[in-house]
Amino acid sequence: MTATVNQPERKKILLVAMPDSIHVARWLAANSANNLDVMIFASSPMRRVHPRILQMLSNRNEDRAVFGLNLRAHKLSFLFAIPLWIFDRPFLLGGRVRGLLISRAISRFKPDLVHTMESQNGGYSSYQALKNKSNERRPKTLLTLFGSDLFWFSKFEYHQRRLRELLATTDFLQAECARDETLAKGLGFSGEFLPLLPVSAGIPSESLFEPTNVDEISARKAIAIKGYAGKWGLAKEGLDSLGEISSELAGYTLELYSCDPKVAEHARTVFRGTDVAVKVHPKFTLSHEQMLQLFRRSRVAIALSRSDGLPASMLEAMSQGAFPVQTSSACVDGWFDDGVSGLIVNEPGDSNLARKLKQVIESSELLSAAAKKNSATIRARYSDQAIANYASQIYKEVLQNRNL
Image 1 (cartoon, rainbow, N blue to C red):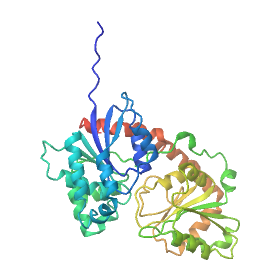
Image 2: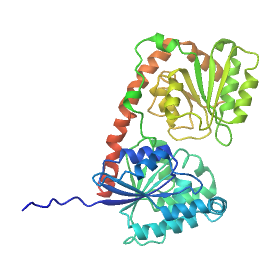
Image 3: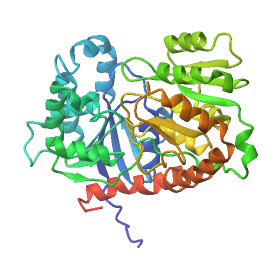
Image 4: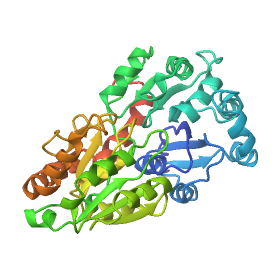
């Protein structure tokens, strides 16, 4: 008679997240080897499911994680996407409609953990679902902070109140940098912090650039610029600084990625009549591999904004040997040394920025040394293997309610 091997109990996780996010897709992939049952609740009604997530949904290997989509809620949300987007936003119904759908998903799915990735769309709705549940009926909760969740939105009285409510119902918090941990404490979070971890889940090890000599960097004649404007982006200010040194940039190509039309128009105006070429990559036109190729041919990568988390674009630039130039509003502490392996910009309109950029762009030795240092940092802390080794343990530890 053959003995029956008892399989470990499958833990259930309700993941409240933006279904089109590559960050969410990579997170799920990092946890695919775990014996988990993960149900995805789409927090953003107008967004389609990312192709990589769709692929994982179709893979039903019972020896690994099983991923599902809360299909009824997703169909309802997608069907009524426009009214939901209008009325269920924070300042009107405040996520109550999605909160009701999440509450029903909790009742039916009975998860051991509700994991919310991002605060304003998913977090506020999760709070609505969980606020009235007794401790006996409430699953454990994990909140992963995205970009500007706390740094930007806590500046506003309404959002500050909502964030306090959300953090009061959060057991575990995953942040990308110490800055956000400090902000969370100030907003009343009293749960357990998980170790800091990039939410964007790493670069394939085989895609990392390994610099060997100065010539590899000095041969580069491109400058990558994140082309965001609007509420947060400061691409125009960066272009103005580069315009001040346009004569020193003769023969260079400025490559504007994720570029807003107004930023593209501004760039062409600033560099009209110069020997600087402007190449525009509108939003969503470059694949991840094409982005890495862009950074691999770039001498410097500039991304200026009023608010950010730990920018995936900065880490990707570092992984390909491009010197990162980033505003202090982002989580940059501990990733590069200011003036040595990167440049931190405090005031994008500062007249000194043009001078600093000129010094950096012209110094092949500085750029080569920075590329070597940044390559080692990324391999140790941001390769897909380094991230996956830790990410795959988080659910295990949280579900067992043990200190990390």
